[in-house]
Image: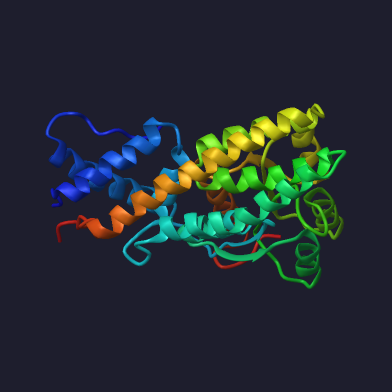
Length: 168
Length: 150
């Protein structure tokens, strides 16, 4: 729900709102001080979505790469580049997200994959999960969904191999 | 601390965007990503959205001129458009996109056309309102940021 300004003393309430917003941003960032340098691949045919998802990840210190179609995503992974996280849309140009996900999993890639897409119903959700994504998230990708996943990945890296080592 | 009338007007304009249902919580998320290093971030993202989505709108218009309708193609276009619109918090535009997709799924061509006309209206209205908001924001200048005591 969008925050609203109280009706009394409007000028100081504006200041409180601005300061509160800044405090909330700092809290979001400090809540997730990652011990490891996570990397993510964002696969989305829409520039606005791809840019925003990458920026959101980067705001948490995640290093990101972006591609705009499924074929390039598969080729990127096939080239040997490793990621801790792949975020992929369902409908993509050239090669769709379902098939791209299957091909990535068929390569033996076990990293966390998030299917972030416009939801059309349970059948689409099940299809994406069956293709190999671990989590299905309806667009837009938001911190409430992302932060626990980043914490989980960061914790796995820390426990399994110590800092600065990729989990695969 | 900022108390000038322009910032006050800006806050009112911003609130009305939410109250009138033009934008949702996702718009707040965009604002969260804006900082001193990127003071016009939200405006830049919205500009990017309108630039890119214009192409999708054109594709849909052209697809609606071809009979019989290719509902799968129309749905795919609208899937992308809806995703893009939701990423900037365009609430009414997103709602019309959902309706359009429902008409696609049920093969209702008339419904698609009606819904698309309404969608274009909401899309244009939002562009106008955000344009006015960003113009005022630029005139008002950046918000003075709070700093923690040392």
